[in-house]
Image 1 (cartoon, rainbow, N blue to C red):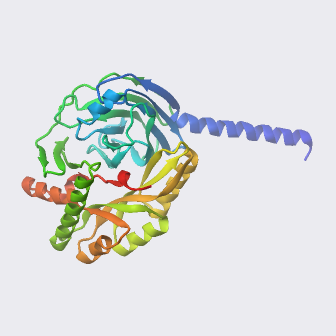
Image 2: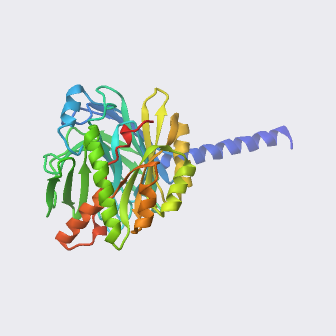
Image 3: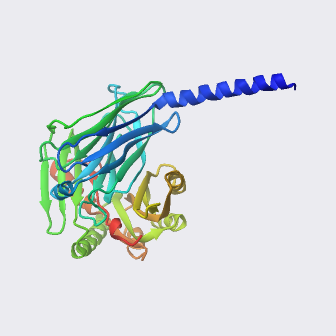
Length: 396
């Protein structure tokens, strides 16, 4: 091959590579934008970003944000403070939402991560991070982040908005504080805007109930026709934490003795577990895993918690988080939380309760949901449940 022909081949290769790169970049676009102070106790200031990895996945969220001292004081007055990322689409029923929340990471102290859909389409397009405002790791002016990886579940073009908001209890108005949003387009460009306030949202709530047991509170809300149960606990208080762990054990034992179906549970481990230990526990208990949380330390010595939806086995989910840790430069310590379902039967439950590596087997939310289902005359499986974990108070 002569030099001229070789040079032409190299030139063609470079052009094709440039076109390919441009197509991938054009598929999702890129945007950085910041927001202004809105309603306390939302983050005082921050920046929302988004970027495409390839033609089917995209990351979006707050790459940094800060709370002022007064914001943190106000944050403690909300019993259910959370940050919400929602990937809405321009499509109309029956197509609806097309981005599925899949992986996440944050250095905000949080009780857990909850995803759900608004009843239109199958993807879980709403991803909520439940903040622990009482944690000693929640500090004024420290830089925090919360980012989510989305997977496109439809073929062809998809356009819409990813919204970022602070959310509080349903009975407070406004119950949302809209911080920022970005328009996305598959095979399109991107634009964005910041907004100062989210208007008051009127819930189509046929049910709104708040109850307290003395050491934890639970809330039941019917939002847009979907009934959801959420639990709030002051895990920063060692006495309350011990009481809750004992009560959760009793709930789990009672449910599995007589209920003839699987029960949603949240497992919290006493210390970070390796992938091999995690797989062994799942195999011995028969637990069907929905998601998991791994913990780690970043290059500044700060705690990190990253999670993944488990749809292709634990090993694949863990590998996804290992890749994320390498890209974001934080060191993983191991698994601390599993969310899933366990088949009823005392034998399988006893395997978990007697395992010294398992601190908490929590089916409290399922127990509450069962009572609510009986009141409303609906199936227990139709009720969404959020159960908090005290893992941020464990030794890492």
